[in-house]
Amino acid sequence: MAPQSPHDPFGNFSDRLGGGRWRPSVDVLETEKAVIVRFELAGVRIADLEVTVDAGTLRVSGMRRAAPHDGVQRLHQMEIAFGPFERSLRFEVSFVRDEVSAHLEDGVLTVTLPKQGPRRLAVER
Image (tube, rainbow, N blue to C red):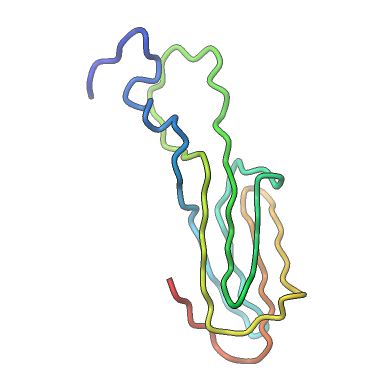
């Protein structure tokens, strides 16, 4: 690791402080009646989140804001991404669009997509 300048407390991490795009982790589960998608979104506020379902595509986008760095003299490690994000998943199964629900709790967004029929799920990435 390169030596840190006393004038730059963020050292090698200053490029990460720009808030570039990141991709949240996703779990996709299926029950007989629904597809359940969980997004890991720790630190994302509900006001900074958008969930849309259109023609078999679930799209989740938003922003995780950087934690304040007031008074930081030196940054030793930085792994938590922030800035804008987006994930889109396309499903080859019909959903009851008016019954889709989304719930954010404890940093996990759970989107429930009720299936129209008993078909099994096929996920396109």
